[in-house]
Amino acid sequence: MTGNGNLFRRSPYRGTPEREWRRWLSEWQGPELSLAGCTHLVVVAPHPDDEVLGVGALAATAVASGIRVTVLAVTDGEASHPDSPTLTPQALVARRIDESERAAECLGVPVPRRLGFADGGVAGREAELSAYVARIAGESDDAAGSWVLATWRGDGHPDHEAVGRAAAQACAEGGHRLLEYPVWMWHWATPGDAAVPWERAAIATPDREVLRRKEKAVQRFRTQIAPLSDDPRDAAILPPWVLERLTRGTEVVFL
View 1 (tube, rainbow, N blue to C red):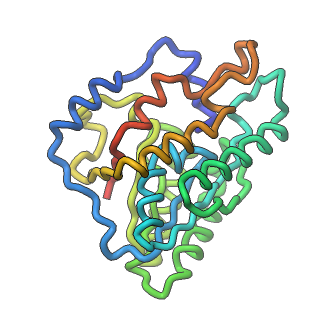
View 2: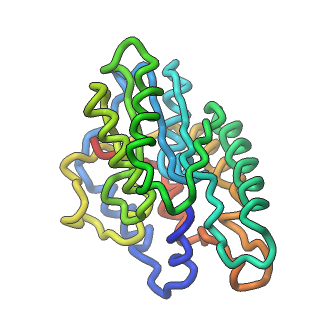
């Protein structure tokens, strides 16, 4: 998460508390997600950490099930601390790439392929991204078995939504299945929110060991979950009350 993630540390509004989400999700009658029929899962992450925070456990479950997994990191997350007196954007990129690779190792998923798009500028390169996603998804002989898992087109972050649109276009042209995962939505939405397509939602409930590995992977993102220094401009992007909503025992996708 990056870019507008600065709002998390600057705004007094903390979003829907995780206890409310947990209560609602425990009563929700949404279907359980099945990976039956998937032979290649292409996970598209706008920033280094989105794939882990949003669907890290699902990706790890897919690998354990014998499904080929490819992770695409669209940007390197250089805009997470734009005013930092401690790290230059270039130094931050190096740290975030290292964190991402360590997190992948924790999950047991392949190291992400890096596209190097500008953080905050994905919308200007949607056609290029769509073509790239289509090419990777098309590496499988079975178009229907190649699923693309991308951030939701209504997530509320410009890079996340641009990734979702590009993935949707690639799937429409290539005959692949599109699944979308929310990240920002858990902050601004409320249980049952009419702006969220709950009718398309499915829930994944990973086993305890996979969840443990996800928690370990999240801890690798020190530049995001801990302050870079005591300077307010270096504050954590993902404070504990945000991480709560992204490390619960289930993950949700929109089909």
